[in-house]
Image 1: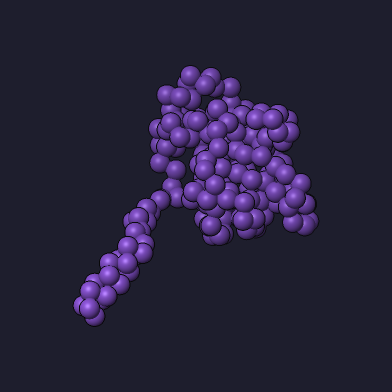
Image 2 (image 1 turned 90 degrees about the vertical axis):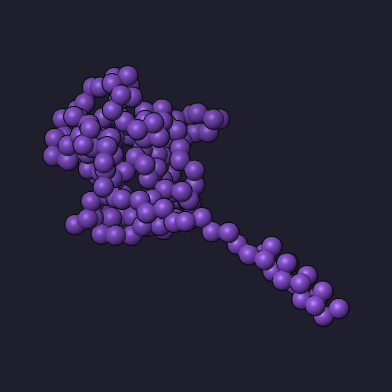
Length: 172
């Protein structure tokens, strides 16, 4: 009887064991920039590139978010729980967007900032999916980055809720 109870307990405990997926290490280096003739961290001139051309250059997931305004799933982006010191650039064109000193833990599932580079972004009203939001786009290449909300911390009161895939981080 003790043996039977021990076997049942062992089976139950094994059934409760968590199965962990291997951790995928993601490089912070933008490998796509090597194949992108429009990518530059120093050139700030406006780009006027067709989506057909971007589709040839960008990876499908970056294209979907940056050019078709898709959104990555919450809590899946590489910069969501990331707090290194440096700068964030547009993954599509290399334009400067944010400083790490403006990043904060918002717990919303996407990397959040309270301030953007004024020369790096512009805004557009977004009424898709029955919502009224403010879309944030790269000022150089017009790529979708995310949305900005007015529920952030001081000093701005803003929360720039960005897609990790639209960002590239560079250490200081």
